[in-house]
Image 1 (cartoon, rainbow, N blue to C red):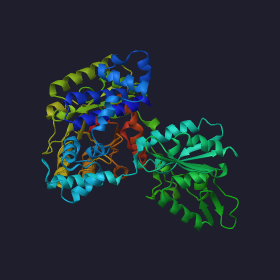
Image 2 (image 1 turned 30 degrees about the horizontal axis):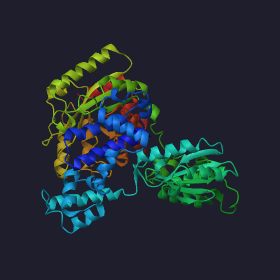
Image 3 (image 1 turned 30 degrees about the vertical axis):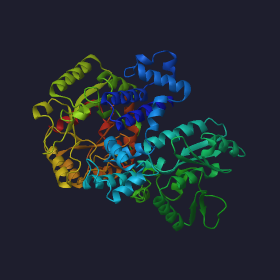
Image 4 (image 1 turned 90 degrees about the horizontal axis):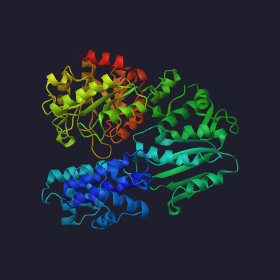
Length: 576
């Protein structure tokens, strides 16, 4: 926990310094320190005790002293002093899409606006457009940015909600009184954002009070929202509400099904139950004429079977055809994490990654992969240290030498190549032909019209060296809306040209979305799952992409990550 706490403080320190227009190298030093600490495989406290802090790349004398101070006192004076210079809401304003540090500082200095509510009011009243460097368009973009942030207000990224739920379940499962425990709700259905976290458990009779007390102790006393004999609610340090329900073993399956949802799925199930002479609720499945003894309820499987349905995985329970499929026994066997043999989108130090090619390979070996594809940024993306042609050749040599020397994993030479404004690619064909895998993407021109962006992508697809489209809609959940793009045209062209579409597993992307994954599957378009990892720790995001794939009804046969190295290389060569 201390690693993440200190990393978060350094990230915020960098943000506060950027408000002060500090030296960018100093800002970057704090960001780099945060990134390093966040990805450490061991406790920062252990490293401090063993006097190894200054040996860590990216940790200098000043940052080492601040880490020591925080571990010993629980505070960092430099950070606390920086915070006093601005109201608490200024960082939230800075994170509104279309604002950033420079504009946030002007807004605060000129209008003394200190939170998003005041910012929205000022924008609606036309007070922002007359500020230096602003204008009517800037004002409208800020209003759109506020709307985007508010669209997920009260909701948490799936990745973050997972971490909170897992930490709580790990604490509760230590209690011998607990027999079964599981998350429920949108978290269990693996939606991209989660509201309140629901956890269900069964407890040894008469021991419910002990479990409720333990659960409440996982937050500060003032953060206990509700406390009953079988239900409690807390607010965690991450400001996440978590609800715990204790149910009887005979009803665990029924309660899990009910509280997993979705609402629409549950309504459809209850209608089926009613037609068969049953009543279905969180306590079980009962005959209409005998409401005391449940026909089913201990497990979800027996509920579905009693209704004449194939078991429906939680990720599919959105009333999007899964009921009809379950009636016909045609629910597919969805892809699983164990099916994955490789990752198709990894960055290294050749562009903006934190690790070497060999370090990425070693992490992949630890994950049990057979192959990986290194896809660093292309030359024009300067902000991401795009790889020049000279450096790309050096990278290819390193990859080929690694493969020749070691047999523990196969590294495939790829590149994430920018689609330029006219639809051409960021490297000439004579360079592209030397790559095993070309993953094209859009990183500029997000405000172009739907026709402009769509035409760029379609033209890129006509290049015979292109294999895949990365993060197809460009969205960042809660931070940046998808750019205008005609995905139906993209899907049709991908089908026509044999282009793969990527599920980008990065927590804020999860792009391609589940809806388009299902459309791609129906059109027999292959999907690749890439973590877009910029640090080896990010390679653990693979499960997020799998969640999206499962919600999109994908099986292992729909996803290229599940095939062997030899099969993959054959598939990649077909395009050319």
